[in-house]
Length: 294
Length: 301
Image (tube, rainbow over all chains, first blue to last red; front, top):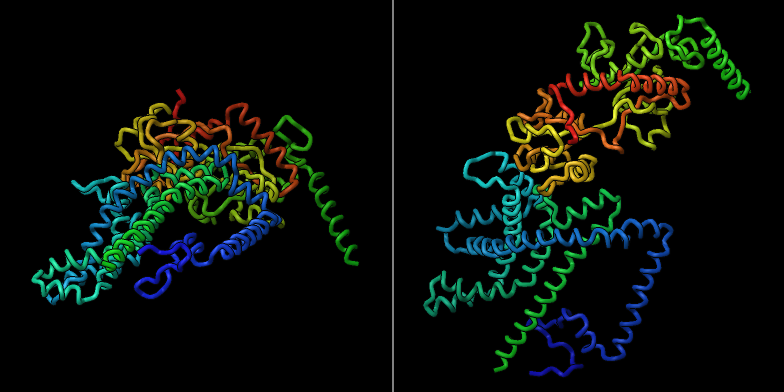
């Protein structure tokens, strides 16, 4: 099933051509002449943007405030050292969210009148937590719960801020899972049932594995957002992570460049993550297609 | 025609001012004669030093309480009680005014720098000097260098701290981008990473939730947070205040631009600093008799 290098990308199962591989598609679909046009067009567009920005009347002031090399060099190491905290928060949350959100989605997909209250709970949960700003949940739990001074309840703001992130993001991720589950044709579950699988087993072995595979890209979307929102934890914890450290520099030096440092650190995680998932999806597709060719 | 009217008006003004200066006044008590002699001062009300401040006037700057029949709502500045009232009367004394020759008029903060004629000679209401503000009004020299203070919860170990190094082992917090935060990182240098909150409200909430051992805020704010009637943090106390930093903000009295009285008040303030009057007043009203009780100054050793 080898594709000739200059053949158009194969249409996917919906009949459209994939545009997910920016550079490879360009070469395959447009040929050498097309590539040349693309290069010239890119240079012109970016050239005009750069020219307009750098020749605006106040560019030196803006450059000094936002793209200050000296400030960048002096603040980057400290901000980078605090980025470990963001990664820590992110990893802890992600693991819990993946499990908890799937649980919510399954609750919501339970059939039959007996499970109505569980479905109702799952619906109310997602509606409420998707509807209120994450920062409010973080404040409410991070400051509110420790202030109750309840015996036996953790009093750490970090703990509660992470719980808040998990609650909030689980609502989004549960919806993504649910969309995945609902996208699996009912005939799949019916076929599984006719083979003698119980409802639960059909869900567990037939529906969920296919559903999860389908929703990996939107899941990644939510995790990129989560990665950025780890900065909100510092609002109640106040121990500097990358963004708060950047803010401290920003307010101390009256310069926005430290925020750029923090942004770069976030990009250094999210861009490779996106590319990795692109790659995994492509590999998966290749395998599926190879399987269907047999 | 119009120009003539204006000229006449200006002449009349000058005449009035000259007349005022020439009018005989009570014998001067200050040694320095010339411009700052009492009879030579140009005042809005003859023979009286008229001072503006906000109404209601708040503790610890004004603590006299309400006087029956007076327009002053919570604290009557005529009592001389409270930090700014005491400073104003001490300055008046230096300029040669007796207590009965000092009059107070209500003056909202915004009016203190708004253009136009004023019904006071100077204004005193915790106005911090800034170069921008100094373009609109003239400021006297500092009569108070802002200090930072530590607020904590009664009975916690940190309340026993007396020196700055006593504070090192604690979890301390301040709002981001404030001089208070700089005090933590530059003066205290604690062993635990300092907390930096997005706002004063967040820092207060953190102390309420016992996330930190103490918060550093500017002194007037500390007095407000721990005020017995406010208690933004339950059972809070102001543990102590820090000696003013080199670049501290300061309060100055404000004058209509170009008012020569400013230089006389500066001379009076310098004299009060030299003989310790100002320090004594500061200690009495901003350390011993604050609304939260005595607030010691942390020693640097």
